[in-house]
Length: 620
Image (cartoon, rainbow, N blue to C red; front, side, top):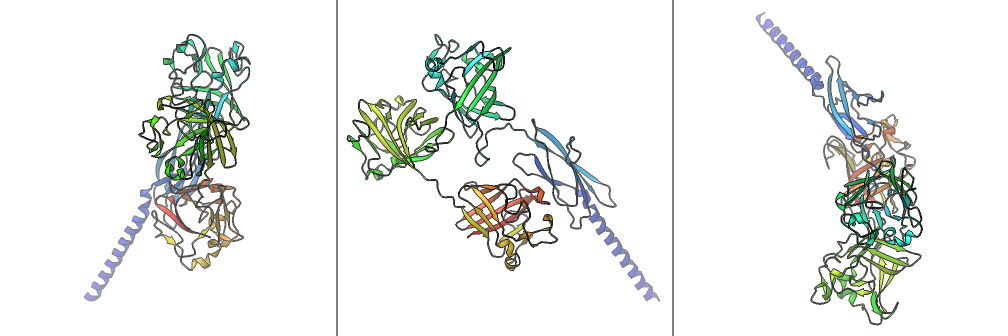
């Protein structure tokens, strides 16, 4: 009996131990609610759409998370989930707003756990979009005062110029004002280009109102930017001495001294096509009004040009189209290679650049010992802040900016320079463009004329252009806890057959910047799209190839961005910061990390926390 009792006691002790152990394990599992935390992902370029995903997500879904996005003006900003990311789009704002996101975790048998985090929707005034941002702002370009009566005036109220306005004759007598350029560049910078004469007044030290040399800081040397708020109807110029219309006009006053130059000026602005109307209150009811017109930029000239690599690409002689005094030989294309590789760049926003590299053709007037290849000499070294004006009908090309030039630095209107100090503020060439050929002529003195022939450079071929598919091999797609880590899941070699409807999908990058998903009548669909299981099926809108999409390939930055709701690479559910929970959550834009090596394209994208998807595509 003693033996039986001992066995019974041991069995009882073992049962108690197992019960305690199981209870502890269950208690530990229940306590996972105490470790609540969540990640926030910003999901659109505007910074208004956010996704929230909890970091502790049991696979059985027993924890219910309540997410309140904290918008007091929206009763529908509260969601419940057992794990998948939920998203919310805040309204666009006119000033930055901070919201508090509250996440509450609920688990049967435990008290709720709640934590909060803040997100800020940042208001950014509408400035012209950059590259790849959907097209240039209507303000981008080069503007002048309209050459007509009433282009500028002042009066006792908005749109009232009864105190004074220019007449038609002023367009000629104040030509130095009407030829001033106001340049809004695509990168958000602004420039006054005034040449060697503009309209100056006694407050600037002039003896009278007259044409004269620009006066600092209103002389175009300001380092300036602009912000154009199309919806609000304003344009703000930031930079001491930068201005529109008249230098003396600032918010609330007309300045009495150059020292009073404002750091920033805001104008009421209305742009209608190539016309910009500006108003600004200067004091009391006093308002100035300005009417500007945009200079048309011919697509014929926009691009990068070089001297034609041939004999007689440049020459000089005693008359127009006469190069009998001297012209380059075919051998000079090699011996003067540092000249023939110089680039002359005409940008769409009206700016111009000389790109000379570390060697160009220099001559004794620049301090060189002989005519030879050497380091570019200031100000003809490509550092000039320059613009251009191409008048196709008149057949002229004007380069504005001290040290900017075409062909040879020494050649200016009416002379050949004898010193870099003599660099011209502006040079006008007789110009003829025929397709990818530009011929320029310029009179330098007496009957002496220089002639130049340039060839437009074709942009380099985009290596991404073509049709791509997932590589038909194991691990062509996969996901894991880090970049280039697919340890959570990757396709097998058998999947190439069982998921053939995915591996035959085409991703097409067109030369014109457009993108297409070509999926056929079957692709891989999943329950988040309404499918009963992961399976081949009819493509589901908007991930069905109907998106009107474009792409931007940043080779140096190693990224590909698809723009267009429903466009994707690899898997439709994969977007920046999340995996979609519904087709309605389709992103407007997705950016992938991209490594292109010949006919192989490797892509990576972070979906949440450390989670990354990887895709390997091959060119067809």
